[in-house]
Length: 409
Ligand code: ASP
Ligand code: MG
Image (cartoon, rainbow, N blue to C red):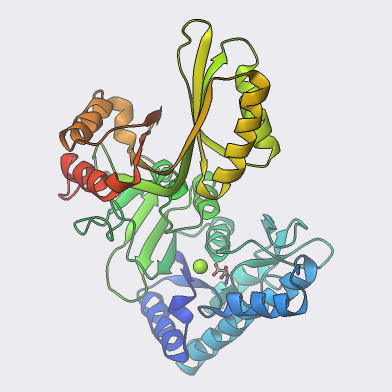
């Protein structure tokens, strides 16, 4: 019998009616001839409520006791779902992360799964039971309860699918799949039938927040076919898989999607001496201040001096600018400037590997709209540009149109 692991997020189990609806949905897949393992999150908003309770006791609350508290959210939903299944005549058994033997390291609040002992779950499945597992939690070797970091139930789903060698891991959420871009910016954005892990990771890290990044990495590592679909609408969702999939249905588009990031800020230092160690002297103090640098561009030197531009998260702009001004004094640089009204727009697609001219097409599209590009960076399957924030919507829509993402290839 095929085995499906299904994960339902907080909104999908946000009320008793919704939990009942999840039970009906799980049963429909069960009746279609699948063995079923179901992972659930806490009811929507519950984990935040628990965090808030902890803060009232200790604003710094974290570590072991916070994990003991937060895992109660999922303990509620597994029990309610198992009851709903049993009431409908379908034998079910719920497990907390510790009971399911989801073994993690001991990093409380952000633990990593090390192994899963699936003996009991496999036995339940053999007995025809539906297995319901609490997302987001595990247990370390000393029997301490751990959590996997916010949004960690996706990872639980994928890890269980890998451990149980499931045929598919299905993540049910409030969106019905992965889109070519954010439909709030481009109403004609289209749901993708399939996308590769690599593309999904690029889109996720660039700010498309459909799935926890770690879950996608995990699925890629263990080659677990991952499907994102809606709890509320009937649709096939989006299948995330390896480049050529299991069949030949993979879309052969050049570009799969457009991501954007409004959280960027740009800093420039002009007229620093073009000698060894300059990049280190500039970026060193930034990373010492714990600020992550995203794009970096150094100009070709002229007259023995060069310019250096990089981007950071907008929240770090003031601190980074201050650090850079200090550096400029020390290095006797000509000038420092900054701009926190920029955005990054990226096109992503594995098709870039085998097709030349994608970058030039991108620049042509932006030029036609009169959009000035401030910075460019590329990787194997991605081209990013930094532009003034006022061009975000225009740029995304023009690229979506120009690369024909509205129509299915
Ligand atoms: N309930 C946890 C959270 O809100 C885990 C999850 O939903 O994935 O972060
Ligand atoms: Mg979630």
